[in-house]
Length: 314
Image (cartoon, rainbow, N blue to C red):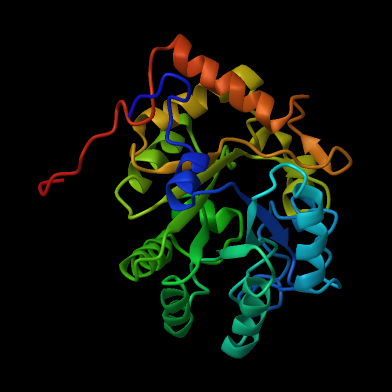
């Protein structure tokens, strides 16, 4: 896949293939918790997680879905007159509740004017078959994308960061969702403690053989209020933070190996300044993405250049 302007398959291109108009995601905090926080599987959550680092100002759980959509849409509506919206259930585990309560929340979002679909972020161990039945049904009339927090393909890493699920469970969830005809996304963190450069790049080849539609990657960030922040304070030598240019090259290396059919949603994340401990590169997400695109061109490369189609023998 070559593109003179964008040498990777981007998420906006995917949305353009699905809709004849501009579409914007509106992040929602529906007040969910997580089985890794409420004691069902663990306490304290994943060691890197502080949801305040990526939840928008309007996404307070005490606001209704309707109120959050109204406020979020008012923020974006000036961009394009004919813009439509996707309700993005983002914070915590957005499939972790009883079925009737979940469906009620999704239906409230889909009933809001100009909302044409939902994006649901969740854990791979929190997707019951009954909920997949529902998503499969509404996928006939609305856009549906299920994003699974994969984070790493290595069980040793998942255990270290207290994910409380295995990569095998991830593969099962992704496969079962895809078999329903539902688009599936994966979220990955590059640079989790204990992972070598070779292991990080191996994530790309491992994921490439799963039936994914989209992928999000971002750098490891140490955020205040997390267990990892305490670990970093006690054992800073356990962490390797990429320099900006080093990370730019890593994203290109990763993309070269990645399945060229995957749509890359993002390369980086930016936690609020008052929460971020490290690394602080001093660049905005779009600026870093432009650096990555420039590096693609400098290296005369593109997504999937080194991708190897899996054979039966493999």
